[in-house]
Image 1 (cartoon, rainbow, N blue to C red):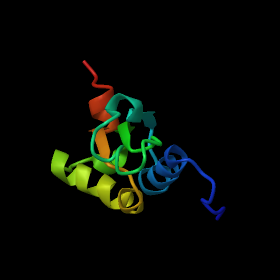
Image 2 (tube, rainbow, N blue to C red):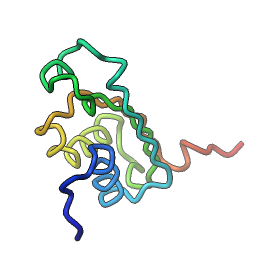
Image 3 (tube, helix red, strand yellow):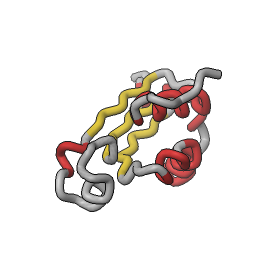
Image 4 (cartoon, helix red, strand yellow):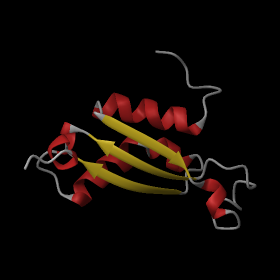
Length: 102
């Protein structure tokens, strides 16, 4: 597997999520600029890549509660949280929830 050295945080997030969840939909937005002056941004010197929003649609969430889904994502991204990811807003859906019939 290709090393992650030199990758942006978004690229690393995407790779970890792709590997673990095989998403139908994955949208990642860096919201760091909106949080200038907040904790996390100050701690990293204001360089960004600290606050993200994520929409993730995956069959892996079938039968799981919101809390269980969130825990799985946080576990998959543990290394990012330990290396400066400060906040992650999650929207987690199954394909059926994302595209309801009727």
